[in-house]
Length: 496
Image (cartoon, rainbow, N blue to C red; front, side, top):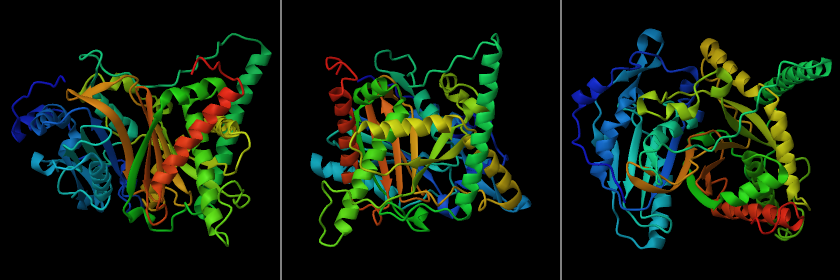
């Protein structure tokens, strides 16, 4: 294993000299303030499996030398009484003992897996004091079934959204194949702009496409307002009650093959997100069918029978990175240097309907996901939710600009590195990002890494007491969809 040379830990005064650029005195953005609401006091938690044991002094040295160059990671969030208690960034001294926690319990592998799961879940019972910068790192030097040690990064979501936090993490990483090369993110191919030359038909199609986007946006914004006012999702075993945002979470994850996902993607002419939404639709349908079957008199019928009620309304709050829409720099460019990474919350969201039904053809789950996905691409809903939230917060406060509580769950898909990477010189086995504090009982997060796809669940155990069973359903649903692709001859069997 190649680790970076250990450098002397610099004093706080040295760190302050490094921070030539700071956000001191600037107020938090409206979206960042949303993440401090009682029903959406959200923390991002990233569990990183490491191939070897971790030397805490190496981590501390790199934190000072690299991460503390980020102003937000060395700033408190302080209420400004001059502006009605609005939070602002104020630089402070960073005591690493408050931010780097080390645990080295002596356990067998089976007990270690449970210990790590419990440790991560117990973090959701705690908050980081606002008297210090709102982040910490937990080093668990304990061998599990997947890794030799685990490093957990916890960051309050007001510091940055998933894309900027991933950029921050990736700027600390290098390729295993090239120790000086930055990782490459999985990104969708950009569509080529249409040629300006063309006849009447082409101009008509372009005009129709623009009008369609505006019409879809109007419909989606009206639906959002109706949802906020009175249109709740169907009360299912997955739907949490009001106040669920403040409850502890059980956090579990399951690693599946990215090659299987790509096989379905290529066969269905879809995107990776389409496939993962389809897999999630299939898994939630299986899970709810089992739950409704057990709730029937006699407890029978969960297996093989359709126990689902008709017309279930089940939607996800699905988050969208707005940097491409708002003209911000490409994420790959910001990874070149830690000082180039701009931590911010440039995200909007869409209300994404999930079809809950038992399908004879497993590929129908992907087809419906692809259809809804195409429809959501032809709308500015995410941009509108971003600017609506900013406007409502500015004039009416954060309560009116908060995230919708009427949906059943949150869904997020963040692209990860295409190749195996090292972080601070330690080889990474897996990356499992998630959140707690969101106003739903369930969050499903998917992230690709090298040739794997990690599906991470954050659940309220009072509502979803068996998250490992839901992981099984997700894994089994991907297998059924992949097998359907092969059985129908949509891909050559030798490809798999």
